[in-house]
Length: 95
Image 1 (cartoon, rainbow, N blue to C red):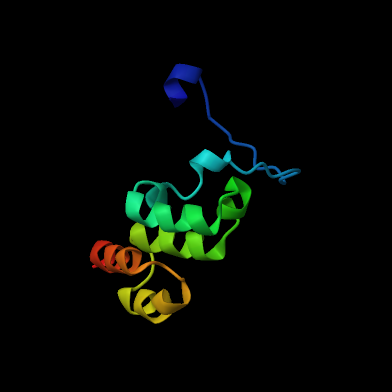
Image 2 (tube, rainbow, N blue to C red):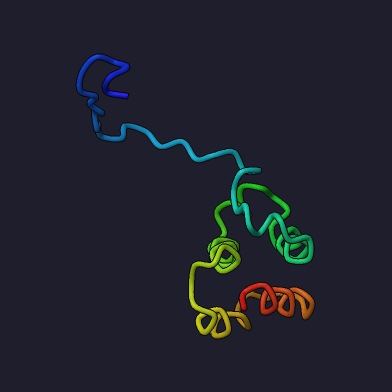
């Protein structure tokens, strides 16, 4: 790249003036890929913005993406309010 531009390349790092969250349909990608879990979360949060801002949805999305230990998932699972099928599905996917 340096040669193509004829010199050194610099990237300016500037303070963030305003944050724009991605559109709701881009939020919680891994959770959105699971129909069973999304059925539960859609019942909890019919409004997309509420779903987008849900700490429970963020946690489940994190577990599905491989972030967070299985032991933590097992500890908070009863507090999530998922259906029996949703709990089974999350346990299966997080192993």
